[in-house]
Length: 213
Ligand SMILES: Nc1ncnc2c1ncn2[C@@H]1O[C@H](COP(=O)(O)OP(=O)(O)O)[C@@H](O)[C@H]1O
Ligand SMILES: [Mg+2]
Image (tube, rainbow, N blue to C red; front, side, top):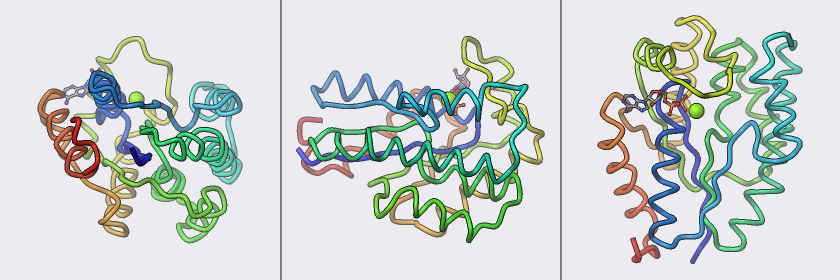
């Protein structure tokens, strides 16, 4: 089987982690070799960076430092998880991927988009996800979901105002516009089960050699 790298993007509360877990179980049940990872996180260094970037509310980073650390995490994930596993013919599915910095540090925090594109290209090299599923949801709906979510680690980006989330959403939609062949927008307002079915159909069409599915 040819290895594939599939990323899930979208604002906090859009349903990424829910769908990743459903897809992971689905692929496993169909005997597909699949690796589940996340950005930031996923590698030993990435887990430390995740603490600094996402979980620790007492750390205030300068905007550029935040961007550099996200790019460092991205480089670690691509080198240590994505490239070797895809090369070995596995499916790597990732909770967020290369588009987050345009959305969060660019559209969210206001850093220059071209500069972010350039830094991300340094971090990722020529490697791009084979497919990116953008789960698009209204920020108000997403915030309501976050408020009722339990048992997850604190994410400081989820605590940002509604306007910030709306800007981040625009950033993801901008990426989909820039790269329509790679980034597929799916409506995240439907039920988890319905969205899962759609994602399974997309994966089936996308991977012709996965006749086992
Ligand atoms: N399609 C959906 N409809 C309603 N609630 C959902 C849906 N998908 C996820 N949720 C719930 O919303 C919350 C946020 O989902 P989650 O998967 O953690 O989002 P993300 O990883 O994008 O932040 C969780 O409590 C989850 O159970
Ligand atoms: Mg999540």
